[in-house]
Length: 487
Image (cartoon, rainbow, N blue to C red; front, side, top):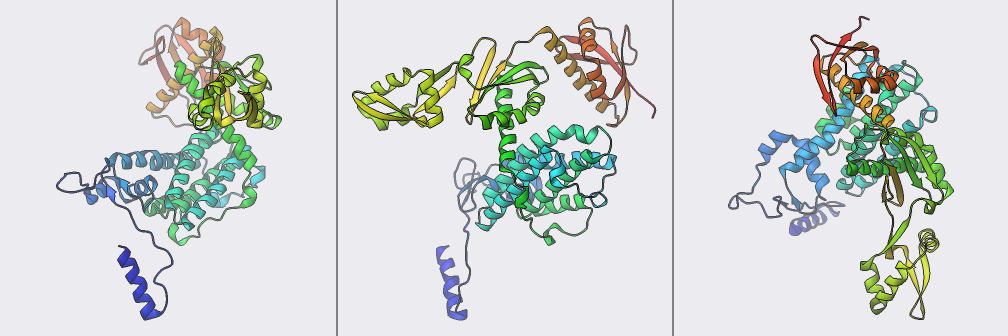
């Protein structure tokens, strides 16, 4: 292969007195999933044409490019293509389907609406657009530097984690509730811009799928490959806002991991989450996202502590891998000194990233990477930390919280029943449930919430329900019937 590259230059120099090419990328080998070279003798070869027939060229290409740099050897696994098709392409398609469903209901047409100025849109719109234009910068630089793997991974992360899992999920209500006003139009314009731009960024790797999706989004017959590549609008990139929302995502992830650990469903409300803050900037940042955190984690209160020592007790653990090579024979004395650090010294180490200690008559510099600082769990609470952030979650379930949890579960079952019955998302209904003492107590305290969430005008309990559908969840066994109201 190197000879062939050389020969091209040699011929071009002799015949045309110039180089044959400026850059070259040479592919690595495609190996089987265990890292062995594919061969008929071993029976581990994959038929490329069968693979393309099964998964299509775009999912196959996206998997290969996102899995390893083109010049590296690739461990090829059909399960990997299936995962890419499900996670990336499936998520992108579902996001488009969500957009098109409500856009058709509201008869939204991008060309007919006056663009709402970016900085007059809600904070979440500004955040996702900031992330979008940061993404354009990253992807453009990656393509320019012959790094398609970086580009594909950045696009995948944006679509799955930021656009679908955060923006669309938090903005759902804006699409299916309320009048067709400025807020809803801003949501449509923002999501449409994100989807169209993602198509353009990804078109180099998935040319067929992105061309089709682009034409569906724009209602144009022009190919995406005849359009200009996106250019980042620097004025829309807000690093502080990105950091603020990404802090919310980290705190949400930590709290949800605690729920999972304790096997508490997300629909079950909890009372309080405590977040220790290191400085005023972090405090303000988390205060700005407290309402988001309440909604995402399903909690009533977010309390910020300037000094966590009054409630949460820190413990410090030596990082033996870091300490061993540095201190050798003094390691035992260093560990004893670390274990003897008081809360003020631990706080100083966290803030200054370094602290001086006296060990065997000499001064050593202990760095924050030499230790791990953790918060101990306290009774009735669970604690988790990551990326310099800590959350403590109150896991005590009061009778009132349990009733609200049942109400939320009921809403979920009603919504599923609406869907199974073929009702439109805008249809108003009446709900009838078979009498159940526990369920009635939960409904009576949360009735307005249930009616609002299900677009119901009435919810009635009856001794018997004919032509109803059995409904079971948690400790509840009842029967449900819903009736569509005439418009």
